[in-house]
Every structure is written in C-alpha cells, then in structure tokens.
Length: 511
Image (cartoon, rainbow, N blue to C red):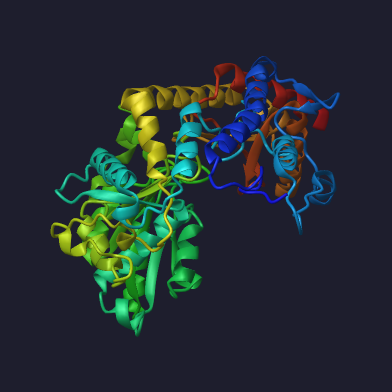
C-alpha cells in the first residue's frame, strides 16, 4: 500500500498533526527517563560513587557508556534503508540507541566542557524552532523571529554599554562564526577597498592573547590572511594579555611594513578563564586605528551579575563583542551573538545585492535592516536568538544573576577543597576568574619532576573518573597537563564535594 509522510495510507488529505502527536508521545517516553536518570543520580554524585540504570537488564553508567568508535559502530548497527523505511518502530529503535550511547549532559557529573545540559525551557525553544522550520534570512518568512532577534540582541548589547541608537547584534552559528564575522567587518570597515579587491598589497596582522581561542587563526585562514599573521600577545601570571607587549608587537609589525588590523581581547579564556584589561587595550587600538574585538564567548554572561560584571570594565569600548549564551547560561547549543554599538557598520561591511532575496531594503528606515542575512556571512540562519529570549522571559535577568552567582560560589568552593587537600596543587587562583578550576594531582603536594609523568597521571585519572560518573577535561601546562573542571549553572554543591572525594579515591588507586 502506498504511504504518505512515511507512515500510513495515502489519501486525499493530510494527517501530519496526528502523526506528529503520535511520534512526539513515543519519543517523549524515551527522553523523559533519560533526563530522570540524571536527576536520580544526584545522591551518588554527592558521594563520588558510580550510579547505574538497568537497560535490557544490564547496569549502565548514567553519564555515558564508553565504547571505542569501532565497537560503537557494531552496537548501533545503523542502517539507512535503500527501499521502504522502517517507520515508527525503526525510528524509536534508533532514538533509543542514540540516547543509550550518548553522553548524558543532564548528569551532574558532566563537568568537561564550557557547556553543559539543556534546560526544560530550552527544550521548548528547540521544539518551537523545529515546528516553525523557517529561515531567518528575510523578514517576510520569519517576522516574529526577526523581531525577537533584533530586540534580544539590542537588549543584550545595552547590557554591555553599547547604548547608541543603532546598537544591537546578530546571532551567528557559534562563537567561531561570530569571531569570523567580526574580522570580516573589521577588514571591510577599516579598509573598504578589500570588499572588491581582496587583501591586495596589505599583509594584515591580527593580535590575540597567547591564551586566546584558536578560532582567530581559523578566521585568518578563511580571510586569506594566514595563520602566521596571527601574532600571540604574551600574558601575565594570571593569563591576561599584557598591554605593553601588545603595543610593542604593533610597532614591530608597522616597522616590518605590515598592516596591523585587529586585536582580539578575551573575556574568559578557554583554559584559565582570564579577563583581559580592556580599557588599556582599547587605548592602544585607538592610538593605532585597530579594530578591537572582545571574544566574550565564555565570560560574557557575567554581565548579568552585579558581583561579577566588574570583570568586563571597558567592554563598551570594543568595536564588536562575541557572547555565547549556550555556554555559561545553559541555553541550548548553539546560541551565539555578535554585538556592536552601530549595526549600520555591520550592514555596510557585509551587504551584497541579491534582488531575488532582499526585497525590503527600500521600505526600511535608513540604517535599519530587517532582512538579517544582509548583515551576516551566512544566508541560512536558524532562529537561535529565540533560545536566549525564552530563557530570559522564563527566568528573568534576576534569575540569570542567581544562577551565575551560585555557579561562581561553587567554583570557589571547589577551588578551596582542592587547595586545602595536600595531595593537589591548585593552578587557578582562588576564587577562579571564571567557572573553571584547574589543578594537578600531586601526592604530598609534590609534582613529579617530569611533565610527561604529570600528564600521564592526569590522563589516567580522568579516564578512571568516568566509570564513577564524572567527566572532566585536562589542558597542557608548563609542568604537564592538569585537570580542568568546569562548573555550570546547574551544578550542585554536593556534586563538587563528591568530585573531590572521587579524585582522592582515584588518586590513591593511581599511587
């Protein structure tokens, strides 16, 4: 019998609503237990011991069932039908396997990356975007979402001190895309001939913190500038860019006949969580007419906290700023904004004629663009701004502040637990500048003489923590790789205390 929509007999009408209801109800029956298992594992995390659920009668780690790629391929047995599909039964089988063999980021033990679990309101946002399934490139096909993006970005920009009449921003496909867009805008604004002629005779030089994100080099590759023309600026003992070193490098580049273009300062570096001195950096950028960008992908959300926002002093002096609510604020991945004090600059830098697409330019007020793809590098744009907007509506700015303050308190608590234990050496300051806590395992407070030995210890302990329900990361340091634990807005006090216990137990096993 012929089928329509992959399930059910063909007819003169459609029953997509009924089919959607049936599938959503069925998938809900798999998703809710997945989240519930993470909630029920909370007491075990507080004690630093494993927690398991039974699947097909076999106990399985709630956090993740670790398999090598080759073994996982065999277990999943993924098959894409050459003929008829497998319908609801086949769909649910695959969904079940995806949940079974994925990392459960809802688990308290996921302390590995600069993002963590979704939230209930985040699920609603993602579902709504899927239902609408529209492209946020022109206002005509996404009116409500265009308004939401414009107003949300404007309100976010205002928090950072971008208060001009055309202050605002755009959402991009992640922090790397936001940073790339900022570089394109910088080059096209400061050297407008590059829009048509390319880089030409310029050998552009970009400057970024030695602890900055690798996306700056990726952006240089994409813009034909070259990775070797990204110059790292030395940092101080706390991982902050040293302004006088930046100035010296700019002078050196000019003396070499190169064109200093762009400075990438960082609010919350990836490893140590450091905040660069933005006011001093801005002064140097103005002196030499360089574009100042702040990569606040990680640390930007502290703008919601009265206790923490002082770390962003001078951020309003930047020409552009990246912030990723999907990181510190637990908004669904991906949600990134590029903000500025004047959206007219973005439009002038990026606009191109496309009469088959952009029809609203003649109706817009000067400097006001509602076809948002005319401001960005990509045409296909999902309404990622909705994720932040709905969370903001649900929790409020005060709710964000409470969540952030609690997370910072817990990061400081973990740092204190590590600092007070004679078998660890804290690398971070206490309290740490962001939500990362970095440290070595060092029995009796003494690190191994060999960096390789310290790295081996760290890696081994990281692997042994996973069966106990904790997933943390590590990063390279002068004395070998050290632990990097990332607290998030949903982390509980018992979790960091349980992690400290688990680290102590695993360390004894290693010794």
